[in-house]
Length: 170
Image (cartoon, rainbow, N blue to C red):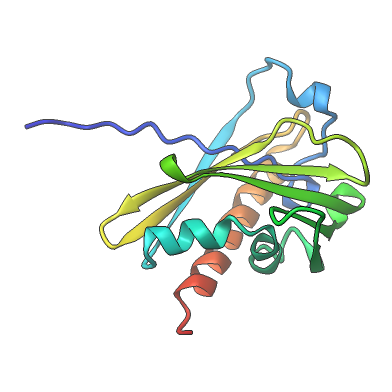
């Protein structure tokens, strides 16, 4: 029997609304090892539909109401948007870079006109007629156990909102 292993990593660094403190780009790129948690949700939605839908940054703002506050607006490019993120201190720019061939996304957040720091990553994996969506969050330096648990709970709730949104009858 041939056993196939798929190593699935997706990184999404969330801010303090999810129990994580905002970090500077230099802190985010340090080599310090931090706890991480990979959270997943299985959607009974075709892979291609999910991939296309998540490529639009305005859709991220719509389903992740635990992180974003209020509606977003389209940015200068089709894959950019502006939205309010209270945990990051207000307005941010969001950019989604999509790698369709491997079902991966790079998700960039930056306040105001600041340059985008290293991206967070998301991964989609085909699962029969549906898709698994995987997000890995990292524990922020100095986050308490309670904050870390809150971050994991908030992200899992966000993934359930994504599931409800995409599986709802159109």
